[in-house]
Length: 575
Image (cartoon, rainbow, N blue to C red; front, side):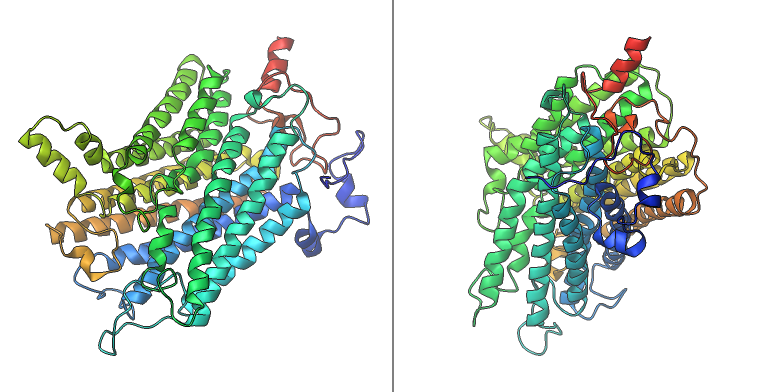
């Protein structure tokens, strides 16, 4: 049986449970012992913003070092192995310490409200997931800096290599801690998915679920299918690593390459699925119009999710997987799904009366970043796609396919990762500005949010675009190895592009700093507007039908839905 908090009586006010109930813990004890999804959601967001900044600092160091392709001469890393540690931690931290906690935090807070539930499903499990995630990710970061990490691909032989060997205990703890992070994310995802499936109100079918909740349902399904596979890869490597003599999977030179499919296409797109849902909820409200062809929007999110499943695409075990028709078609369909969803948003905006807002501008930029990432992913498989129909013996076609095939193994793939994870962060910020009045009872500063969104979008384009162009000049994707630059055709151009990428990463970080400052001033210092905080945007979905912040139990009376936009139905009925 699901354990939930007790719903308050209908005549209770928002402040009474905390102010008068002696059994409700407040302060540090309340934060540590809470099962309230609203408190957990806010905690995820705070730490997700800090984790995103940490990963961007590491990413900026890597991009700065790449400005000299001749060696580790700028920041003077102790060895290529230490350079790899920083490079790999920047990737794992951005995904597991930045993007996922931001998205899960928004979902933990908002999804129960959108589906009219009194609490998230399994609230104690949701709380356990958060604290497990926080402790495990903290341990992982520490272990990497004490010579642990997920492998040492450039480990040298003998004392003349200058390469440091791995600390076995720290490496084992790195593997265990990141595995525990994944377990926590899976547990949090189960709570969110169960809430959408089992706690919807009367009148709301799955086809009438708000787009953000729908996107978390389908994203959660993909995560629950794919992340256990990654966890199994990690477990096999850990078991082998603990042996007297690692045979293959636990060999420190090969460990990372068994795991990096999670940061490759199409799998990396699975972590941008909620962005579509966030923007899909923002746009109709900004346009003061019902979303046209709602079912098509749901189908576009479903298609995007289906073709982002990448647990089968593991080049370490199947080197030819990127030539397979399924892989190529899935990569091409990512662009189709994104364009279809974007077209639906454009149709709604064109037929409504859109009012400018930080969340609208930032949300549109997030979708555009996803589209750019999908377009680059399609470019990366174009060689195989053209080769499949190359019955015509044409020299120019052969040259085109050869050039496109040469993009594999270059930083073009890194460009996809930069664009997609950047889009996920931008989308989460758009959701934060949209739902801030509901979460905190005050609005964030709109112009500052738009500026932050613009900085992050520009930074993501510079960071991702510079990697794409550098890949066309044959900079290898494994930048932590000296061989990554053996085939570079224009060394000076690649170095300049990496400086451009450094500026891009700094811009993304500057955008996140602006968001944090806005949170401190508008929410922490109480400077944000509290006017009409219950429903400042004339929202369409159920989260805007309760107080801001919502009381314990969320709704005094269980809501009833008539469509995916029950509040808009009520307003149109009154009119």
